[in-house]
Image (cartoon, rainbow over all chains, first blue to last red; front, side):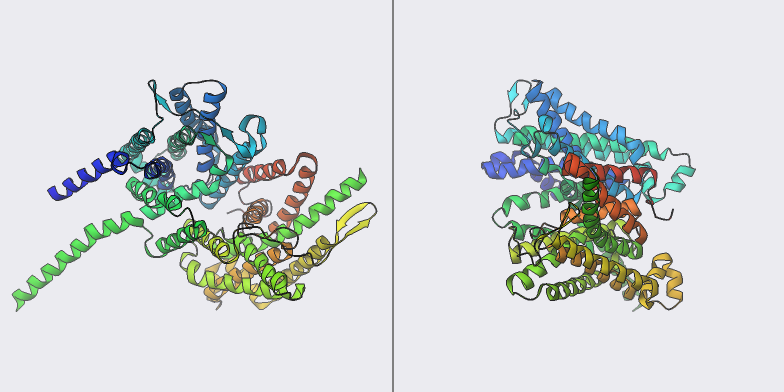
Length: 326
Length: 286
């Protein structure tokens, strides 16, 4: 146990000092991307946990990104209020559309959010005077916290890490409260939960709002980190990426979303020269996980740490019993 | 004004027939296997690449190339169903994600084998037919006639053929169908094979009209989505109604407001249908 906590502490320190450890802008950039997409993957985890896969989350992230970009560029709003607004816009979209969209279940919800998300992306493309069309918006100011501009990537890294950690803790907290139990109940047997007096739609809307806020925040960070936004970054494929991160890591725990992001986000950056092989690898690994490890990395860790030890213990007991008989 | 109306209607019909071809397979696969086939656009793409290879590079007869390419796509569909999707039948979310994985993999394989760039083949039929002031490209007529013929054949197959009947039976009630001695596994393969074959045919027909690339399937798949939701997921008459509706709406709005607005309107219709009548215009209530 002490060995494990020492390892955990070391890992934690390594994650925090990563940019200073590698001292390489490229690897630091990968780290920033990882934590940025961790936020989106976590927001997707909330949706998956209640059994409603949203393909609009890429577009909601995009709304956050465009909000931050437009507020800072056109209205000279300082970073922090603009950044918070990007989250609020995500939450607002969820609050407005949720009461109607969340009545739809299963595949129909997936297709509904798919269509809704694509409409938003088409709006980015078509409304050129506001959103800049295919070219998007360039020259977004960098993040600035309390008069300190995050010009250095290392500081962007720490900011992204902090946000991801906060999102992770919020998810852990939600899942540990009664709300978490209700979400799981809604996923497992909604009729039963409703017969016990649970306001199913109300809980779903609440979770959707939190999830939309997180996706918007991820977008707000995106805008200020890359300093540009284009519509192509926010199609349903971005939501699919967040979904795949959850599947590879495992949907059962928020940690799965984090693991998935750490596994997946570096891939396109590291294999930049051979994009086709990168996509192929992405597809094959997804097929492999779906077919052989449907519970993701978290599932593997769980089965290793509980089942095998139990079966080892069982085997040990059997040997003891056999000896006594002899 | 009348000429413009007829022109819009003709354009709508030529769009609509291809949409129906795409949507029929999609809705057939969902109706029978409850799989939302996110890889449907990729079978369209493979059909087009077949034409690029057989007709463009090897120089075979265009119509012969279509037949051969389409059969290959059908076979590919059967293999994909048998190896990858069979275990997920009935589990809607997981099978959908598996179909996404298949889509990603097929796109990547096509990009590796044929290059990511856009390519084109010579048009086997050229020229424009002018009837009473309405312009119809001749290649669109060929596409329309072949599509229509296949649609009628498909309808007759479902209506009268032994296996067509079996497919409809499984779609209605798998358990009762199994009691009648219909093997669901075989029907799954057949449905997925026929579905991808139809998508491949759409791709093969459109290959000379548009450019060919590994990512060309995204838009037709989206159109199939829209059509199928408008008509009702799993409903065959719905796919026909939805396809024609989408074709006309697209033709009408892109004539007056541009294609982005037309697509936006189509998605808007999808959202409204899903919210107020999720079973679609022609679908059965669940």
